[in-house]
Image (cartoon, rainbow, N blue to C red; front, side, top):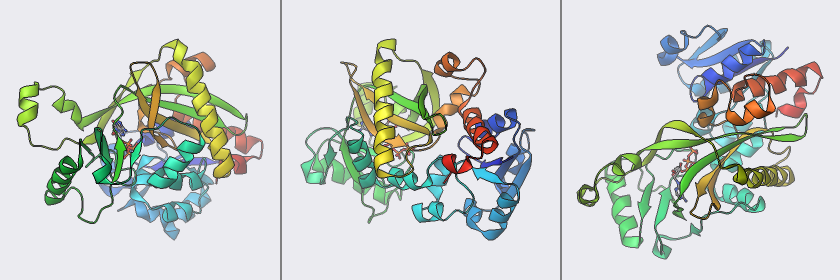
Length: 341
Ligand code: ATP
């Protein structure tokens, strides 16, 4: 039987608890500084201690994973801390599609896949001088919203950019990505596509709480105007959300269209968990500014099962457990190659 391994961060507790509940061996690649934290959890069978997560690419780590028939569950920390080349070079089988993670990290590829999936997107702005409406300026890769800022026009962009450079938050050479700001209710829609059942499941919705853009919303306009701090979108945590039931059909359609687009352009497609992230406007129209092609940390709010999964499963089912279930079924039926890359 396969064992389940992941990096100690992001959603590793949920992933390994789910694997343990499915009766699989659990392995955590753990940074020395976090050993005390992770030793608190009895469902972690083995810790591979490292000074840096990059060591997962090294022979020693890969050998231990191989000896344990491990499947590596990728999450946001892997995407944030390793280059696409590094991720693609991992010898341990990676759950889902490791090739699609490049499409998540590269802004242009991301836009291409979202367009292919017909997701309604905010307008990209090619050059700061073309900023006509309130826009959001982002860094490359999964920076988790840190160093992002809003700009109303070119002058505003230059002032804020220079301020962030002088504060050492972004570098002078960094190419930033600009997109029109979409206002509305934030909704991060998480799905699971099972290549074994060839079926799409809708898992749940979460909202992100981001600092200090939320902090800014808590002070009166008079103080906001006087503040010269550039607020960022640094994720601090997540909270649950359920949608109006009339929105669900559209949600499934978006998920299905994303799976189909991924199947066409990034073989073997969008297997496993993924998230379409965006906002609903005043007409309940969804605009998507981003996707994650792997489990998202927002799934941590449903460690005991999500509202939508309680409709599909007559048991407690977290995303971590759902992943482990897929791997277990694949192993039992000799189809591990269908769920890993
Ligand atoms: P992660 O990889 O952690 O998902 P990221 O670095 O790829 O994050 P985004 O998710 O694109 O960044 O953006 C971070 C946050 O900025 C979002 O959660 C959202 O609050 C806000 N945001 C991004 N794009 C837009 C937009 N076009 N309109 C409104 N808000 C946006």
